[in-house]
Length: 359
Image 1 (cartoon, rainbow, N blue to C red):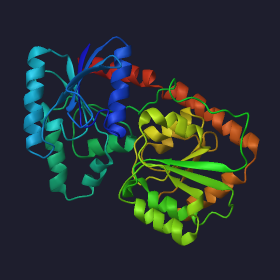
Image 2: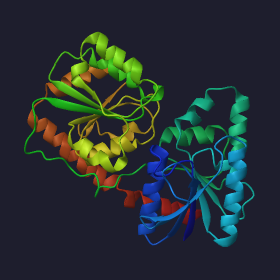
Image 3: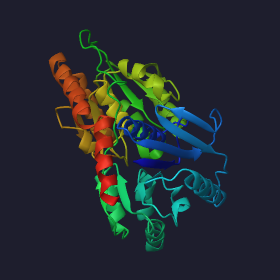
């Protein structure tokens, strides 16, 4: 197949959409498909390059609407004139309007929790969402919650759940021969409200067992409030903010940790969660979105209610007080689940099946 991805973000841009689009494109190329990616030209990138078997075209377009839509539509039309494709696969809401009027199928992966927030608004906004999806042949989404939301707004085409994935050759199991009695918890995500990071900060102040450290890999608008909470509680010495970390450096970061925390209010099948599992880190995650699909309760991790600092603190205390053999079992089961269900090659084959359905 000849496949064109349109993506809101793509490396060197960081983030979940960029990572998903890159890894899925790479896995599809590995299956023998010709994959092109059209995205925005950003600082530190070049207009054209080969990356991991993918042909990347970066367009110099303004980010603001409607200029973004005009620029992307023009660039896409010119690209398709010179490079006939079998289908276009859109990642993220922003490029979607640029694909109207094409004579090939458009697939849309609905990544964003912002879609769920829009559903909380009056019916007028939901009507606009339905209109934006009118020309789409198929919707894929990395959480059942997003699938249900897509159907709820009135989209009549096929909607399928396709999980995010992980490169299990890049993210590998940690060494379990030397396990420290002091456990390190990693929070690897943007420090924004929907990720529940302030709830996590408050939870740390309620933990009774002092035998822990925390790594925070990410930046965002909530960082200052988190730092104030840690300072007021006198636990700044337990927490290290490492800032934004390139995905290429994340395998080493996970090796420094023992557990990964996902305190989200909204979440798809978390890429951070999958990378953590493949690295042998059991998850402590909220019971929202795609997180329950990742965690086998008591086998690969633990589920807690969202917005609940007390429940999160109690679970952290529980794992701090558990024995070494329990931790080893959790770690090994996490790795196995990541390899069997979430490797990007597995996800690419599922996606390939759905492509064939609309072709």
